[in-house]
Image 1: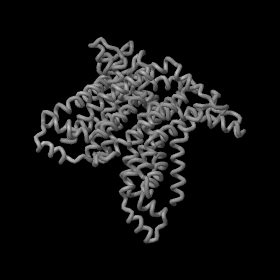
Image 2: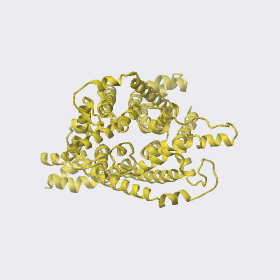
Image 3: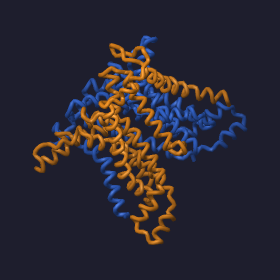
Image 4: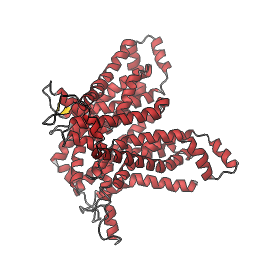
Amino acid sequence: MKRFLSVYAAGIYAFLYLPLFVLAVFSFNSSKFAVWRGFTWHWYLDCFHSQALIEATAHSLIIAICATVFSTVIGTLAGYSLWKRRLPWLTNSLYLTLLTPEIVTGISLLAFFQWIFRFLHWHLGLHTVILAHISFSLAYVVIVILARLRTFDPALEEAALDLGANEWQVFRYVTVPNLLPGIAAAALLCFTVSFDDYVITSLVAGVDSETLPMVIYAMARKGVNPMVNALSAMITFGLGALILLAGRFQKEESA
Amino acid sequence: MRRLRITFLTPAALVTLALFAIPMGIVVAYSLLSRGAYGGVVLPWTLDNYSRVFDPLYGQIVWRSLWIAAVSTLLCLVLGFPIALYIARAQRRRALLLNLVMLPFWTSFLIRTYAWMFLLRDTGLVNSALESLHLIRNPLPLLFNDGAVILGLVYGYLPFMVLPLYATLEKLDPALIDAAQDLGATPWVTLWKIVVPLSRSGMLAGGLLVFIPCLGAYLTPDLLGGGKSVMVGNLVQNQFTTARDWPFGSAVSLLLMAAVLLLVLRILGRREQTLL
């Protein structure tokens, strides 16, 4: 049985990684089709020369960075307060945002923005995408921060209070430094979920705010395009590295 | 203390209210209104949008979503259980083995779906390989069917099954397994009579975590199912874009949310905090 399990496990890991690996290998294929014809950098160079891709990448980065900053700050503060005292309605609402199907989140935000536009002279654009991303990534931050706080000793805070620090000073000089690895991990997770999102983004983005996943989606729909393979390889590699980094931060003991 | 806590909580509460509760409230309102001539929403109030969901045309899509999600969840359970068991029983490097399962989940979902398009389409790797081996003459229709959608969903959400299963299996007392074997049970009997029944809570949690996103899936049926394999998620998207029938799209969304909530409350209701 043990042998069976090991072989089986190897099979599952292959199932999980092989498609991505094959995609990366074929991003260096000089043929457009899935038959190996020799090595080339061509598709990568194409990516870097495409104005549309560069613009979409810039949009994705702006959105992901803004959403990450806001979500991380707001989520850290909220996670800390929820750790002090539970507030079931807020916690449950946050969990609910995680369980809501993406398409439902997307259309509800679209309906909301369109409704707001009746009163404000706004239109869909980067700002609406950023707001949408804050709303779905906040829960990730709160969960990561709460998990981190479980290993945090409240006696440290009490000691600081006894020594005359006020609430804010305790938070600023005792808790936050201890939470930093968790905050960093949360920020990295936020960045990846924001950078990667297609479903919600495509609904609330304006005509002038196409993001990288939206471009990839359009290219994938259109048919064979090896540039998608090259892009996929770069993004998977980049996001994978960020996630490994986030894992590092999360694991790091507060010693 | 109080004041600091309120200051800290306000932004999150505002975000949740403005970007989750109010939008949902608007969807509720829209689902009860009528469709305007140019696609907006107009009075009068009506329940028609809800009754239309049970129209055979749409009912079929609902059923299809339910069975695709159910089959995908079952496959995830069957595929995920042994790997969770393997990781839970590994002597060392358990965290590494588990993270290796989780890692692909955090990378781009869109790209992981696209990877299967690359493998399965007519000019894709699988068909090209089979053709060059002279096993087939014409490409097999691997993409744009229910099978491809199920494959994509299983590939996408398998980590969600493995995580809770691992959590329960890891806590399982090894003495129980030793006892069963001392009493003469074969490994398979031990597995079936001891390990499987004791991991029921993990199976339920994993099943829930997989079934919910599968039921509301949009991207996977869109890309891997083509136009043929439409699920509820695509129906909603279509109503809000091409069909421009927001009231009906809202009603479908809310029924989807209701299904999700019902499942969560039924399965997790008793032990709320253990999942996340």
